[in-house]
Image (cartoon, rainbow, N blue to C red):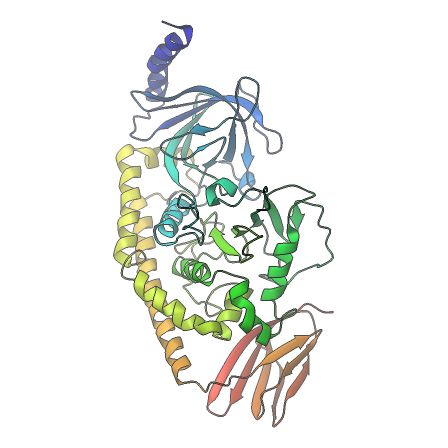
Length: 500
């Protein structure tokens, strides 16, 4: 018997004993991480070893890794999420296949700390994976526009650290973007703040491009300072903004800039789950191959703020289409307000397909109950409650019942709103009023209209009827709402002024 095999045999006896001593008899895999008591930081990776076992077998013998704390806001929580990188004996990155998922060197241990049910992010990504196909699936049948993950229990330096989800990363390999070679190239950007042109209209077109961060985005691929490909993102962001692109140009060219089928799926995802932290940030914008097709597609990420809870874990009594119709970003709002390319009808048609299948209340309830049963039968949720009680449901059944009842109500809201919207579109006059913004000047060219301009506090800033056209000076930088009445038809638009 080799020394390595002897070590594995000894380990197979020792690790289950350690697990049982921690009262962790479970059907979930155990992940044991040993840093030799070194502190895990957020910048440099801490050397460590990792072993993956069950209560009676070894799934992964001890392997060398580098580990660091993951996230920005999440890094401040007492229960940390971790980024893990596998390396060989020479500290060279090495790919490892874990628990039936892809082979890779980089992995995530998601702590799920703010989620009282400890399942929302995984649940939401499973739902997305079930109905969305990546736009280039014909060329890349193995591409996944999301991640796979497995629930595990983690021991850190011999101490029980809780219930985690071991998860793949969103990267070029996962999305199967074209590598930068042979005149082909894919690009991918991660939205990391709300402070970007899709959301609050904050934007600096002169921002330096020799950086991995640019106007609220981070370069995921190629992730090289001198070669991040910001020009493709800049073109897309300026196109979606009414500040830079007229309505006529937007209508005529939108299909050249975004995969509409993907965006329709994404719009339904964020509204069905009320994913309020995933419309402007916590998402990826990617292009499969800029040499062939520069259309952007969307990939969701980090969906803890869903199913009736917000980004800090508190309850939120809001549903789809709250505040704006639909709940979304500048691109979604502009497509909806102008019903560009029959966006409302296309959204309704796709919803009619999904509300009876993947997004039905019964289908969602089945998924929630499956994870609930896994957590309860393994005993993992009880141990999580004991280890991290502050933001953990004291009764998992109450939390899952709330999630299901919230979702059932949300389905009713979506159904009613889409039915109403498409009915209005079918009865509308074909010529809706057009608006344009140049600097701080708003022009509405449709004749014989009553126009009212509101700020976001609901105050009336302008109200007048004009038989020709309206020309309004927007008083300050920010977001406004204009309500236009032409005969028996009325229209509402949300606009943004970045000047002053």
